[in-house]
Amino acid sequence: MSASTSRRPAANRRAFLGATAATLLTSATAVASAAPASARSGASASARSAAPRPKTADQALARLAEGNRRWARTASTHPHEDHARRVELAHEQDPFAIVLSCIDSRVPPELVFDQGLGDLLVIRTAGEVLDEAVLGSIQYGVKDLEIPLIVVLGHERCGAVGATIKQLNTGEEMPGYIARLVEGIGPSAWACRDEPGDWIDHTVTTHATRTRNTLRADAAFRPATVVAARYDLDSGLVRVLP
Image 1 (cartoon, helix red, strand yellow):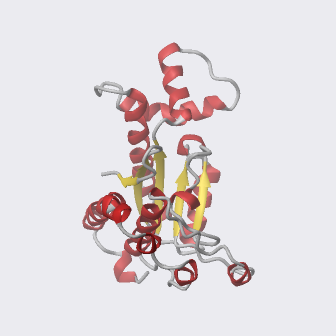
Image 2 (cartoon, rainbow, N blue to C red):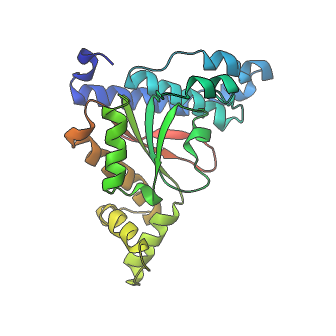
């Protein structure tokens, strides 16, 4: 990513990314489903393997959006899984996006975005809770690997969020290290407690955006662009959050 791209005004860049990504990640599903099987499958895995690595946050987000659409319509191509790719990456890696996601077994980022070996730097904690090891891992991706995009990926029906809400409702003490997860998610839950509707569902969205804002405010993660997103378990689609 060039220096001029990195120094774009943050507000304009984030507004553009949010509008573009929301369209990319949620549109054209019906059209794609109606297309012939050959068209729905898109380019072959080998052709996708030859695609150049995205160099900017815009390009990286577009690549993730394309992969998520394939996943949602069960037309994944599983790129970068062959022997040649393993050989290519034997001595160095060059991922194009960092994904901070939940540990939930239903939300594996490489599958959700239909990416392969060496494409994503994935960091997973229950409820995307931050600690120093997580922050250090993200900083390594930004500074050492020069990754232009960080995605904070929350998901509906999050168990860690559900446990947090249960504790806040009952006052029940959480066992062992699980208490640390409640401490990390609790402020997001309290921030949306007065919103009408499902408290757990609101907390999922609020926590992803608050985590995004925490990363955006930290100079350690510049010049990368940070976005928050939410995965729908039923549709398989990801949408970028405002």
